[in-house]
Image 1 (cartoon, rainbow, N blue to C red):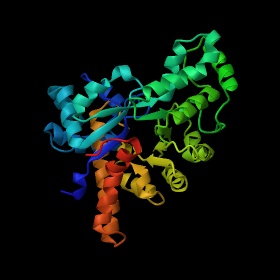
Image 2 (tube, helix red, strand yellow):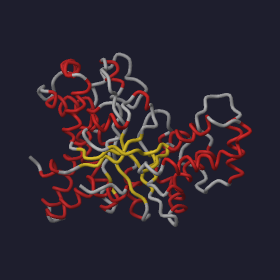
Image 3 (cartoon, rainbow, N blue to C red):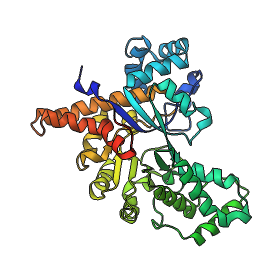
Image 4 (cartoon, rainbow, N blue to C red):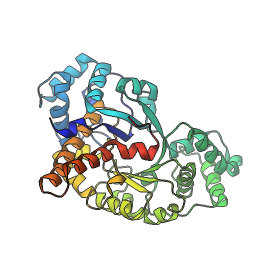
Length: 373
């Protein structure tokens, strides 16, 4: 048993899980960032698929590397509730900060997820989802009211949430004017949006900037999806280095900016965390997908980043297996990277353990104002 097995994790960015049974196709669809697995391809034939068979099968009373068909059959036999309970418990996660603004109707509600996970859950508001909800209650004649309506709704929800999240990377990209838009600009863009007969998806760059700045005004940490994600984004426009001007603009305010995922731009994210006092980041999601290469991912993230700026996350969505795979990948990577520092004399063991505890959960507890354990 490694000392990293004792780390208590705070998952500072994740989603809920499917509460009911999943057939093979439904399970496989949640093993990829693509809209669906390639026709004729086995979704288990990936680094993530191998990791689930290795890490999760023993938790469900199967041998490691059990065939995928056996794994799915055993999961169905135990049922979704028991499988979720076992897998979440095995992850060693003590708190979950959940973005429930994406396909929330397909997943357990926050209270039910907390009960299933056996850990407290807190909400991270998805800014674009809140904006779309606000807009749904307005018409073109109300465009002038939209800027304040969104700010007021976010302020109301901020009383119980612990953070905000922006998906600017998906809806437009980071190559936008980083400045706060004027109320007049927002009103004009809002009238155009509210007058449209198209699906009410927020994609106007002015309104996206307004939502982002409203998040900054809450004072809560503002998470931004960066880097690796689904095909709804253009990856090169999701490079966190493009946020440097926005980081300069928000630095005097002091609201924490938290860069999520970052791969393959983890070094750019580490640079931003190095040079801006209010910037933090993680390498979640990618660490789940890259298998044994997660060690290199963590090592590169730590090349420049102050140790108090890196957080743990899974970005798990839908499957409790993803929580366990992410947790095991993190613990293994910490053992290899920080343990390697000890073996080569770069750090004392006490320092390695202290830094590991910071990244695993202490940084998140401090940043989001969570109770200490």
